[in-house]
Amino acid sequence: MGTFIIDKQTFNDLNIFSENVSSNSILNLFKYTRTVGGRKRLIEIMNHPLNNRDEIISRRDGIRFFFDNQINFDIRNEEIDLIDFYLESKFKHFKNNPLDALSDYLIRNSSNNYYIIKTGLKYLIKTTKYILNFINDQKANNPPIYLLEIFDEILDIIDGGVLMKASLLNEKHLRFLDVTKLDRAIRGAERQNIKKFLQLMYELDVFENVALVTASRGLSFPIFNHEEDLNISIIGLFHPSIKKPVKNDLHIDVTKNIIFLTGSNMAGKSSLLKSLGLTIYLSHLGFPVPAEEMKLSVLNGLVTTINLPDNINEGLSHYYTEVKRVKEVAEILLRSQNVFVIFDELFRGTNVKDAYDASSLIISELQAIQNSAFVISTHIIELATSLNNFKNISFRYLDTYFENKKPVFTYSLKEGISNETLGMYIVKNEGIVEVLKLAAKKSSYKS
Image (cartoon, rainbow, N blue to C red; front, side, top):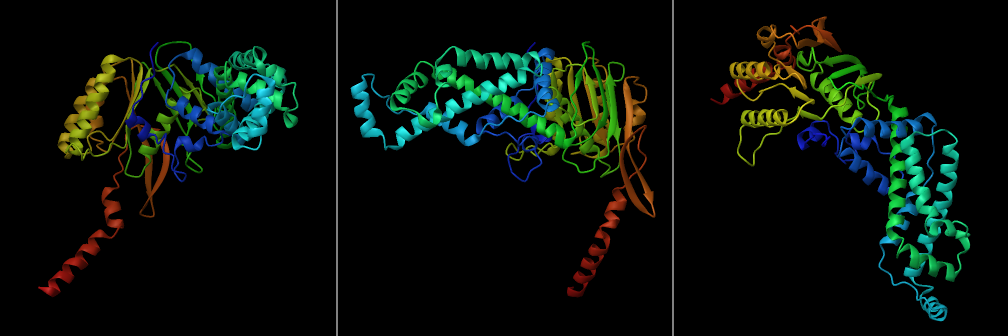
């Protein structure tokens, strides 16, 4: 099956990983993990979208179970964190011989090392008891197979080792001999099993986190078609970071696999493209998406070019950087099928004629590739005329109109081609001409 294709440029375009607290990154959107390990697992998942239908649906159904049942996974970061720290510690084990062990105890009882060992065991026993009750409660709610597999794996670790015996102890009153025996087993032969136990806890932490965001942001769970042919239908698409967003519908399939998007400046083209890219990305994580409804076939990759930076270090012009990016995408399309490609304003770094000619040439070649999907925006509306003959291109625009000599941005996607141009209006509205005239007048005084 291979791996889902996504690159650094796409992650940056969609603002997936910025950890700045004030940013609207998707990582910060899913900020409710209870543990440090849960956040690390979240980042790991977000770095690796899936292109296997069964794996995607398994994760989606696990998250939906948490959402549907409003599950409260009540584990505490400080306790789990200390368990993890204790497992990684290199403290010497207590000796096997009871007398020697007692001598160790008298020497080390008041030490910080002994405190960490005992507290780590205390929290591990407490967590084991909690997860046993949690699993027992959730099994009564008919969880999906993927969650049952996680539950069974946790139970196998508990039943097959020292944790089951440990769960019978009172963690608040651990005797020295209990600490000695448990520590030797848990930081010895069973250490890897306990680490796996924690990893499974982190997985459940992620599920609860994503379920909480589903509720708070009005996300929905995508439905994956069985057929392999390209087919994507989205109703009520929006961007999760925009307050009171205008929602739009989109459909792409093998007969109409290219959307040619036009619209005036500030009409919302880039936001729409980012919203679309996010739904494709999140759906292939098995996560809910920012839409009222989404049905799609499984894709093999997502590649976007929305906020392409200048390559100053290599001394490349913006136009040449754009050309190199288009070539990267072409090479991906040569190697792989069923890729979703987004271009925002092709070749904006050159003059209008070259941008027109280059865009027309590239889109004409892209339309011949039937096994992938393309959404391409442009401010060069004249391009539409040269593309009208291609039956697999659908034309969409974001509506803008004037009212009382001022533009009104509806952010609504409509069928057809935009005829509104706001470039000169924006320049005039900013009063740039008046400022320049004043500057010229001021300079004439000095001369």
